[in-house]
Length: 430
Image 1 (cartoon, helix red, strand yellow):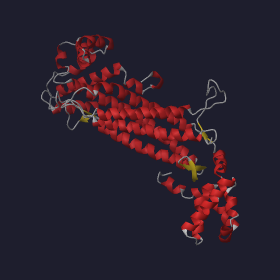
Image 2 (image 1 turned 90 degrees about the vertical axis):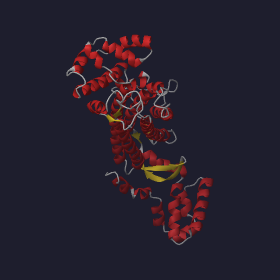
Image 3 (image 1 turned 120 degrees about the vertical axis):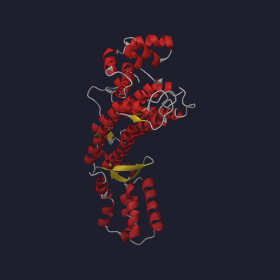
Image 4 (image 1 turned 45 degrees about the horizontal axis):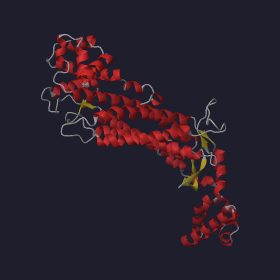
């Protein structure tokens, strides 16, 4: 991940030194298991813990010679050890260390992402409550449809974010597995008891079954959850981008005092953050494809997945974290213009009340087909002559026979469309 989008504390998880520290953490947990089972002298792990030094430069020098990162790591660490070095990496294969340590990294990254997602959920909840009764034009196909509540829009985003949190937490639980089972996963040179104790020390549990690697569908599932989080954020971003258009201008991204929108046009305030989030969501979705491709490996394993995971797993987690941090800022500081939302009804000349007029005519005794034809013809007249729909309806002789002036006024009251909003909010205990 480029520095521009790499935020603390998640970026530190993926630093090279932290990776080797996790590898050492796994190796030490295994040695502690050996001690517990009487297969290594008591205190061996503590001695190694005191002597071991993670020297990234030294590891890289050795790797340049042996062309194997785990062997380079083992050689660099054991150079400082005495006889206790005999127990370092005993009975293990590289993936025992690498995959188990990767699970630690993904679990920790996932927990940080979950924290940020909970913050976004809280901000969406607050915005939904604040604008529960703020009337806004509902749009389908980008066209005025019927009035709705701006708070209901926020509630829709909230519901999706809550679902995404459930998915993420489930993925973190599924990912919290390791494997200390040897070259092909059959425990030929290390016992299941060693694995059980070592993983318990690490806060993981054994994979039900592994080959030389942990099954990659777990990683694909995790990437899919991150992509869904990104798509949820993009849905918010795209809504804001539309509502910030000059001719709409119902909401606006926060714009800091010294911020500038264009190098050429001083008046510009562009939805750059929302657009950035849209682009990032595309990247997240692209990682899912690679994650799915990594599931299918030859026999007990090959390493076609390895090179891709070095890129997509750090980038996907850091990107999701960044997007959540920025989305929370965006929602929390969103500028909302309720007056403009009402003013924009004029653009469709109150045609958005057409269904209510039609249904009322049906209630007065007309067939649905006849009522639809009458209202559709009046809508066409409204567009053709550029007059207000309410005026056209009020002047129609057939309708005047069926509806009083007071009844007609009630048909054009936008608050009618919010009468059941509270029932929806109750589903969220709000």
